Image (tube, rainbow over all chains, first blue to last red; front, side, top):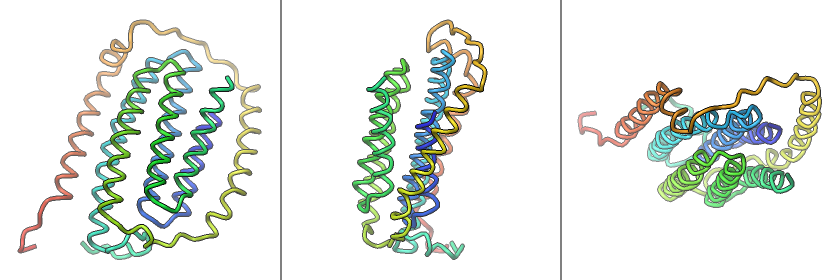
Length: 94
Length: 160
C-alpha cells in the first residue's frame, strides 16, 4: 500500500509540474498503476484475490479505452496547435 | 519478501524515470518496463489473470499506442519543461516517502484486522456470476471508446 501511495504521488506530481500533454498522460498512467496495485494488494491481504483480480481487469479495460480516446484527442490537439504545450491550449475554439 | 520489495522499488523507480526523462520515447519505454514489473508482482500475489492482462494489454498495447502518438506528433524538443520542477522533485519525494512510512507504520498497529472471508469457486465464477454487471459496463466503455475515436478521426466536410 505504501508503494501504491508512492506511485500515486509520482503521478500527481507529474500532473502538477509538467507541461507536455503526453507527459501529463504518462502521469495519469502512473496513477492508474498505483490504483490497480492498491486494489490487488487489498484483495491479497483479505484473501479475496479472485474478486480483486476481476476488479483490476475491469479497471484495465476502462484504462485502455481511456488511453485510446485521450491519445486521439492529443493527436487532434497537435493538428490544431502544431505543439504539445499545454500552455498553448488557452483558446476553446474548435 | 526481499524480491517483492525489490520489484516494488523497481516499479516506483521506473515510474519516476518515466516522468522525469526528457525524451518521450524513453518515458514510454520506462512506463512499459514498470507495467512489466507490475505484472510480475501480480503473478507473485497469486493473481495470474490480472498479471496476464497487465503485461499483454498495458505493457504491450498501451506502449504501442504511446509510441505511435509520439511518432505522429514529432514535437519532442518543442515543449520546455520547467527545470525547477525536476530539481525540486527529489526533495518532495523524500518528504512524501518519510510521511508514507510514518503513516503506514502507525496504521499497521492501530487498525484492527478485518475478518477474512475465504473465497470459493474459480476466477470464472467470480467474474461471470458475481460481477456480471461489470462486464456490461466494460462492453459499454469499449463501445464508447471506439465511437469516440471514430468521431475524433472523422474527416470534416468542406462546409464545416
